[in-house]
Image 1 (tube, rainbow, N blue to C red):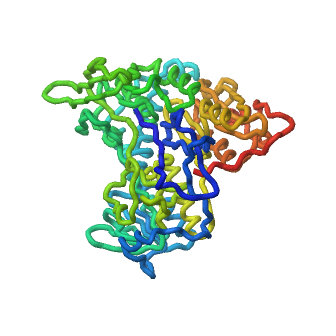
Image 2 (image 1 turned 90 degrees about the horizontal axis):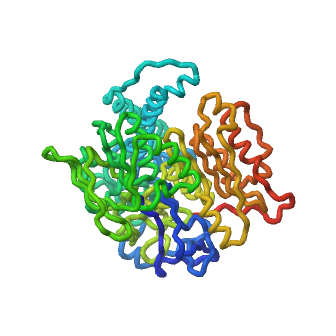
Image 3 (image 1 turned 30 degrees about the horizontal axis):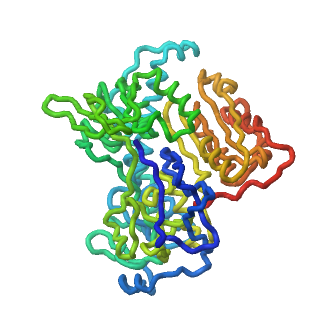
Length: 561
């Protein structure tokens, strides 16, 4: 149910440049897992989206009307950099700015840490840690194979909830203290832009900054027709509090949020029903990985599912009646059936939190809520002109809706502000789903790679290895899983790597770093891995790739998004 994210510029929003980022709009790619927009793939076609690639040394072209309407920028500044939003992206940018010697302030209207720390990545991993332990303790076959005998395992719901809350509090305090200790000013209040290089926070506090970064993140997206009461019909924000564990919960959307919560709820004893708008579960994953993951993560568990349907109306439980969910066929739009469950979790993706930012004061028009930016995260106004000294990172720009992507974008922006040009290669940013076992990925899926190859005229090859051949995995009695490499046999370029298995989220970084550094398979084959370790899964994967002896073309340059 998560919607595919894409950015389409109108002709007036095109930027003149000698370079362009192009794609074909005729065959939409499914990029739902990590929110990576189609521009990342730079497919050649007749219809092009023009994106500025001017060097930082060149002057910005600013419409004179914008300055007249919104006032002139101040001649002196309170700060070198002001960041609106103290989530993971804003925090990463702030720390890097201090390292670069910039006087920095960060504005937060809620709590430091943003979605990831308080309502996302961090508390969810605490719940998943519990679900992992519960699965181990309930898996008699697994324990018996290791020679272990364990009595009946149970859990204290409030204790589990406290573990998640305490972890979030600890990380939030760590982030706050790290900024304070480095001299970052933390300004409390909702931040908004009131003019060029001017920011308001709180009631009437105004600060000026040479450069401004918008890092306001996102909120759960709730489709029309769904009534959220925070008790029986909930979003991920509510679910992380674990106020109760329902006997039967419907999860709308089978992306990584839905999958992770299905792992938690089934481990704690709930039955789960997935509701997915597309024709298959986990549509954002590589199809081969998704098929295996369904066999392991869904089929053996107390999970059923409905695909090809919309949850067009959901009414919370009240007056002794259960939660009611009306399912409508995604193609015919006809009513299919009505489900009655104890609770419903809406996991249909996230929407940018950009309302009230004062973007109209610098002539910026959002696109479905997202702030339009170029490949250097520079904000583009309604006339297609770059807004001087204004940047947007993270979920608010929609390029890649992951916390670590926001942090990487923030660091990239600070590099530019400090005078060093930098363009982030989004195809090198990994993503992970922390189920048991885990799923991780970086780069292109096989269908995406083959489409790109067809357009650009190169061959694609696939290599695979199994966890069943790994000594460490077998010692853990966790041999279920595979690693998949998608590459070019003509030059050894790594196009994508996908892993399903024990600690997949940790293993993916060797591949992501190789893509980021432009390392070819020919070179990475000579890397040495400690034995016996799970890292040898990647070692065997790269060694099994067949690259032509005579390299015909160099590895392509990183894609700037």
